[in-house]
Image 1 (cartoon, rainbow, N blue to C red):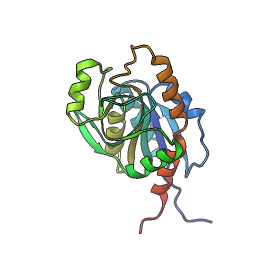
Image 2: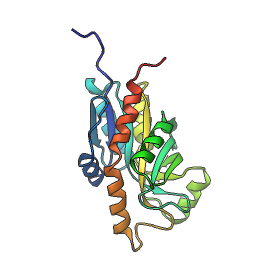
Image 3: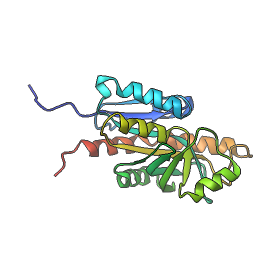
Length: 213
């Protein structure tokens, strides 16, 4: 009988049904351990409730947590389908450092050659960001914004010491706002990218399971 402890699972959190569909129908081979993809619902409060509930389950008490889905890019030159790997998430309540972001960038570049991967702070909001507010958030140093990642990671680390990360796909950018012509094409591009990211998440998770020297 093995005395090795069961590997810590991976909890992948997204907010929207369309994000959940992309992840559920994507390439799910290569998992380095047990994992679950949970749809939290939209907004920071929904993310807090859902992540807190999941991590209260004994099977996920020590899970690594990765927030994903779509986001709004803040920097000029961003395009739908670009990837954002957060080095930290921010909201008015906390800043949370992400773990092993270099590995995520490396794996995403390998999986999606030709796709631009941006790295930097990912900020949280409780509403859709438009116009001048986008510029104000960019001035804080953030490169992208979404409504759930900061709440997801803040809730995760407050529930216990664990690795956390956030990877988002740009669906809305300064020159490509959702209200403009081309929205559908940009959304399809972002959906296809999100369908492709799971193997990078699994490689990140697998690296966390390796013994440290």
